[in-house]
Image (cartoon, each protein chain N blue to C red):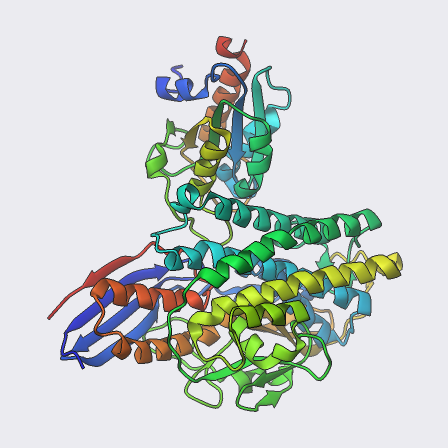
Length: 163
Length: 442
């Protein structure tokens, strides 16, 4: 079976040179595939040296202090994102395509979070989006999104880049 | 007067609890049409509540709004307790007030920084401020995190509270929790002071329209957020059970949300209404800040609702700290901790009745009304949210504002109208910059 992860995604997931790589997972586990980020975090309790997983869940704005304190050289934000792909597709989303606003007044827009992370940590920030199939109320991931999540976990745990 | 022809059509002004459009038509300098269309689909929460237990209603209704989830929970609990004749303890009331203060802080901070500040600082959205006003952005993030964390400690989650239920709390804060909340709140004082300093530099548009202001009022010394009657700046005072006589809802063809009116053609609720009606009961530090920014009751400039929110932010912080200090000193009575579930074990005596909850949430007074049977099952429900009560007033403001700004460019007119709507902090998110603005000069 061919990899769901494109070269671009793999490149975003490989460690940054000369320091810590931080993966920030975002999403709400009670909204189906929106929980893909927290699911990946829950499976990565013992990451390889040089890699740190920070589960920001549904409060990405609250992770900034913790992220800054880690002094990462590279930050990767992982979240479900509707970019018009097939369920389970994964891609690197350029910062300029992340909306300035959220769909609610409940939180700060993700773009602010990524920009602040970039500015405060001085690290390069990548945003990886996973196309959801189901965002309806309820726990658990759809098969397609689960497959992608497992592949990302496999890459982060087995990749020689993280050896 | 300018003889310009202007047609403003702002589609999808907002979204969260709904979609709104601004429609303005000016022909030969005369305002022919000025509407705030609300095209949101009904959400049927009242229908969902029918047949459900009052002991689960607060969890259901908190989902009406993410930012006012604590307020909806508390209005729901109050309506349920009123229906079955249950009076909360003094300790429970204090903790509920603290919860409302945290919601006020969280919501007001977000509105002041994220939705209003960009307009007043002359940028398109909050995002560019990351580059130009990094300290401001970090402060806003820090404040939001602080009040989220206090909510977490107090009710088990930063949004959609878990432990706050009909009858009291399933889990009461331990001493270490009280200390942690106190530390967080006291620690946020410098950031709130800096917020006040920032607000002093902001220039709010000058516009006044005298209207009726409606908020909770009381005879005691407490700034009424949770208890009291419903009063107005026109001298109306009624019990909360008469909320229908206050709101007098009516339907307009261009809005799927009902409009309201009381003594005049429209009325306003929210921070400015509370400020105008209950200024004397604000914490002295809040009144001091009002003086510093030149806000005095009765203020009839709707743009200054944001300034009133700032004053309330100081009030909520200081009163929140005082409540915690008092609880810390007197100690918490843990015998009040209850496990109720759906009241399968009849922990709480239930009888049939009709109850009303009236709670001041960030955007104004919120009403929940439940008719329940002798098992605590909801037979009928009615919820009237603050934004609905403000829609008619916003529209009247727009009608008075437009003729005063006809000499401005189309872009400025649109921005002024958007800012006016935003000043009310309507519970329709993304009202800031998702706008597709179309001018057609005829």
